[in-house]
Length: 148
Image 1: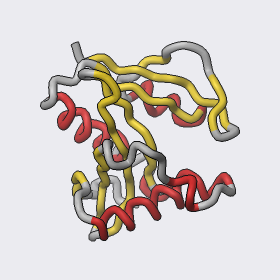
Image 2: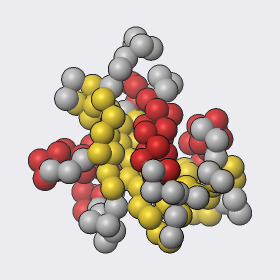
Image 3: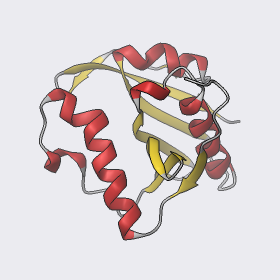
Image 4: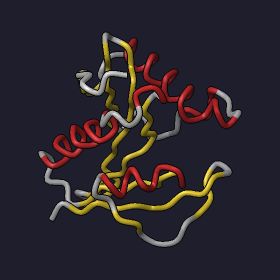
């Protein structure tokens, strides 16, 4: 894979894009665990902002961010299609989201990383916070990045 690919990073707004986004999110995060399509969404979708990286109109990465308290944001449902990993797509998507929330005076961004993604988030400037815990049958680690 060419390391110099240039995907377009954007925030999703229309219904057609959201349908494609939820399908991608399920394929990347839930289907490999044998979980149904209904597990892709939660009750915070309408309050959250959804972002993607697209290459030639195809989603290759996604993430969701939501302000959960004043100036404190949570990153969830982050995924990069396997063939595009290790190409800085995930890092660049996080940077795009960070710039977006910094414009809203964000103080903190946190997430719950799957155990195998912890090194990625450490490289992206996050730090471990608290003890590991289990979600959806998998070990996760809360991670935090402060902007002040």
